[in-house]
Length: 286
Image (tube, rainbow, N blue to C red; front, side, top):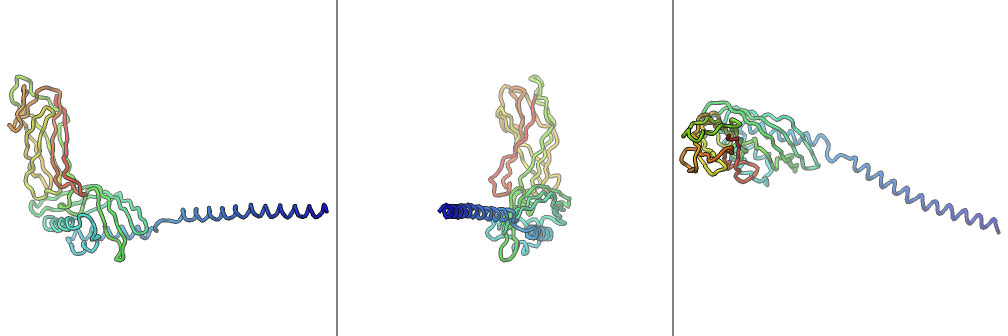
């Protein structure tokens, strides 16, 4: 009797251990499968290289003015598709010997989508002024893989492919600080240096910016083209210490110092589907 009980107890113990071991083994298998899935790459290196090659092909087409090839390398659903095509055509007529170089390029690829971030430098010769030009910027390209291969679906940041597509302008303003005229000095010409770079304005001969004080005075200054899309002013601006100011009288009036003087430029086409942007740089008036 005792022997039968011992045998029954041993069988129950073995069955219990088997029940415990089986779930543990299944859990280990599930964990191993999850780990293997996590270690599996989202997309292989070859697809990332194909996406970058597609972008390089689009760049070569832009340099040679091959608008038809560019059409085949753009996603038709791309926002700003026609605007980019129009800009490429405009650049093809206004610029020659275009060379677009990419550097510090990074590619992140998924199964059917790739994101390419890069800095770029564009060199060219203006047809209207016969002057060489150089622009630089940073862009992010969204590439999409369809039945016909990789195409560009979107571009953000600075758009290197065309002036008309929009590039955010840049302002330089100096010196860092100026001395305002004394109360009894009358109107005095104070030298200022203003430079605006805006590739959207290639072929334009002048550009108007606004000088403004925090005390309410505003005066326009005309910059002259010194290169393709590059405008400068380097000369005296009439300034005066006064008890009040009159905007638009061609004299910057300072009621008190220290204060701030700013230059403002409205970029009507900053690119990346952004609204018109007011660019501002400021210096100290002491």
